[in-house]
Image (cartoon, rainbow, N blue to C red; front, side):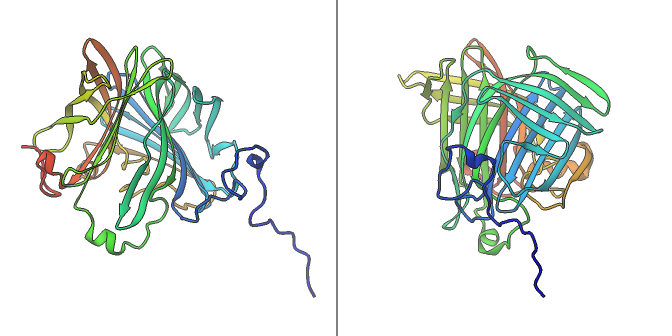
Length: 376
């Protein structure tokens, strides 16, 4: 005897389908690509300039994996406290919530509220953009002929106000002191459970070199993004200056000099040599203050505890503390991307922002011959 069983359609209209925002002949719940690695993510950082406290946090949706997740990590001294949330997600909506984590878009491209409710780490922070958000150049990485990263991203510098609660201690966040940067990116990148390694992982490229530097000065912002192959061939070059009225000028082909701590690849300082459209040099000197390795507690590539988009079951959350002086943790730091607080000088102008950097394996321009090469 047959039974009438109510079923939810595999693809049904969702809240966003009420709005005229479609880009394909599909409901918004379905990505235009069937690639499992499609993602849509927000990223924020915050710091109080002196390096005493730094926060990195983000929220991501992975439609083809049916997962939504978020994380928040705070560094004080040599300890990182990290909390993570993950759950099932089948729809696409304006509700940016997972577990005890929520993002509220108060004013698009200008004001964002970030909330996190957890005994280890709580947040009630409001972001205000200091300059207009800017669209970055498309970012593409290939393994052979297959794109492993094909993404769009916009970036913005700004300030924060609110409260960070670290294990019951409230840390006041004053916008006169607390600054940061944020980005929104979407497209394809490795997420979720690892795919079979195959030829690309076996043969590899021999090295990974990446630099992302958004900086806020009083009268302008600068965003520099560079990626290079092991031989120094530049596969991504985007350098711009943004003004309060939203006008943007390109800053040419940056020359970068990084001072690494002896015996490591830890960047202590750097100089960016840029050039304005009228041919005038624009030099920015940077000193790093503190940093959070994104693969220690934040779910980025190489994090053995949790990766973005990974299925952890429904209504999952987890917290952990990482002692960066522990040899087992310290030994992981060189093998991924680290977000450093950056103190910058451009002529007489003082600026603050992010110096995000990774140098793993061979990179001929800086004299690193292999995985074990370090600064003299």
